[in-house]
Length: 160
Image (cartoon, rainbow, N blue to C red; front, side, top):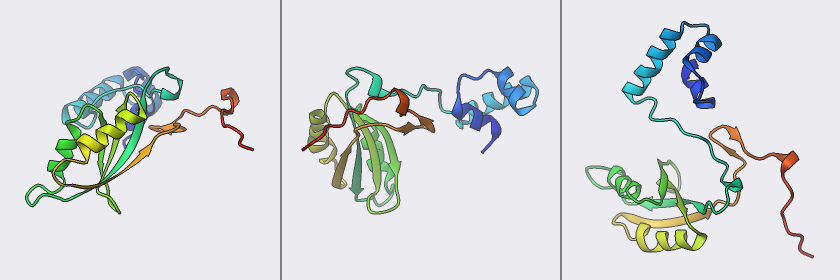
């Protein structure tokens, strides 16, 4: 991967000057390259990595495996577009393996997500099966470690 992209992936708040120093290139070169990446759609946006485990009332998240029937002319794209149109859907991936699409969703609660899957997602034309996995904790996201052993109390219950 390009050095500039790699640095931005790790910290999108780096300035042109900081990146230039890190890769030993002129600042105007770095700025021009980043602007070209943005224009070409290589860089689609900038965002913060949020540790939702530390955000009060951040809702629930789940990963949903979808087995779908691809359309004759559009393959998986048509179903993926329908899935992407829901506000609850954060991410959609085309996968190889035992299922076709992996969908990450958010909701107010586990029940909200379950109802979304049952009433809206599973009823889409072309969706053959769903398998929902509720996210319990995030240890690492987008390359960033979120689990801090030193500052994290063990909240597991002991069952005797």
